[in-house]
Length: 208
Length: 172
Image (cartoon, rainbow over all chains, first blue to last red; front, side, top):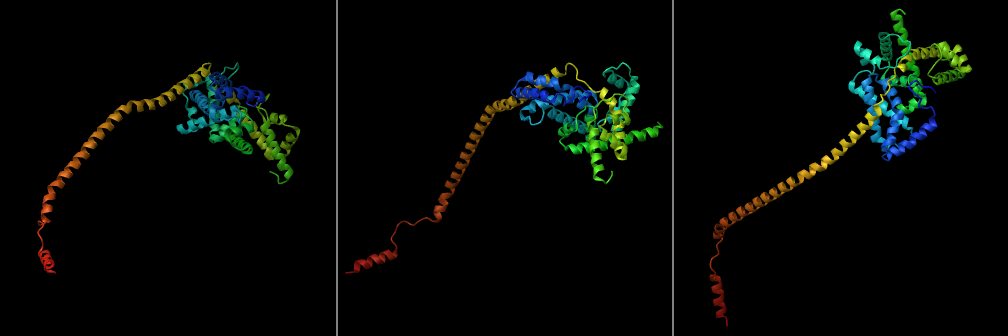
């Protein structure tokens, strides 16, 4: 499985999970170095998951840090029945949702009000591509996407992001969100229907 | 969707195949290109079933829209791991101080509490003693009047006793 934000969670699954199990076991016994290795291994994915829900760079960094600190202090309670990565992404999703509830805004709406300076700074931190549209156009595309995604509720948006952007499988999403695999499939199907309908409606309105 | 069981099964299998499609697509994000990546049975089903064909269109539309998001995924800076470990150390220290803080407060307060308790005991004991004395003296003051009322007459023989004793003397 290829996923855009680094190696997918299922890739090299058995070996990766075996390594994780050993590192988790050592970290549970107080080995800080083992935990540091876990952070190095999973930081990219945690950032990607948080970034798909939050979008504000500062919030993503804060939440990612919070996730690992929380994982460290809860590690003794983790019984390794599920994969460490799944447990970590579950914490990530919950922390993101908690932050959004505290902010009491829809997840992507507050990002659509970036000033030009902020937008330039934001896009400047993104990986540069050789042939890309200019900053303003990219920002407009991004804001447009965020408006489209705004038609979904928090849970469906998270699900769609995990599937389409991070490349998680349906089974992994089900485990992270604590729901049935069939429910994930149905909700993804409906979420895509909504997004596509919104895109077509807005394109029609814009005369495209 | 069709009422015939075999079509319903076909639709279910088609949607499952859709979810199994990989993230990346060589070429443009169109329904046609995605259809080419499906297994033959699913490809054929998409041609026959209008609803599944619509689902494929929606799938392609969504993928195309979200393709840009994947390129802008936030990545951690090189300092992130150090920042996490430092935050953990700080939190551990904070928890330790909280625990020590409780004991330190108890130990600081203990002598004061003991002194306060001693003062209370002394005051309480003195008050109780004074109260008892006051009551005792009150009792003593009131006792003679009470005895006067019921003062007993000196032990003089009653007339009846005299009569009785005379009678005994007169008995042979």
